[in-house]
Image (cartoon, rainbow, N blue to C red; front, side, top):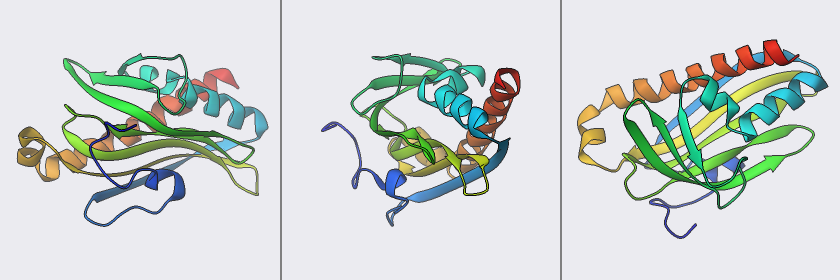
Amino acid sequence: MTDVTYSPVGGTQTGELPPGFRHLSYRTFLGSGAELYAAAGDAVLTFRMHRKMGARIVATAPAASAGVRLTVGVGPVGVPCEVVWSEKSEKRTGWGYGTLPGHQASGEEAFLVERDDLDRVWFRVLAYSRPARLPMRLAGPFAVVVQQAYARLCGRALKRLCTVST
């Protein structure tokens, strides 16, 4: 994890998003129940959610765990990342990646499935980032819109996967 292009690392796991970055928090309701929680968590950890929404994932392992390197691509663009944390518990399953040199942004993004005390299941994307390269700087507010749209597309893809799975 020494190659990540930002500091501090792990803010998406703790929820403590550092100052000096753009913050993103997106959450959508998936449904209820243990089966849905397990299916959604598995789809997130194995990158199936990303693939369902059309992202091209090339990873050094079949599932997210700390140290796994991956390239996430949409169309001709691919960006290098490393999983900096992953978690699978009764209430929260997911992972966060950190940006590596060559990524347009500098920061961290997490994809989570959360189960609350009322047995409701939620999908959440949490991120902090700032432009790292000229194209991202030039994109300005458009880059933020794209990141928000990507989070929504992930949520829709996960809902489709879970509707089929459960």
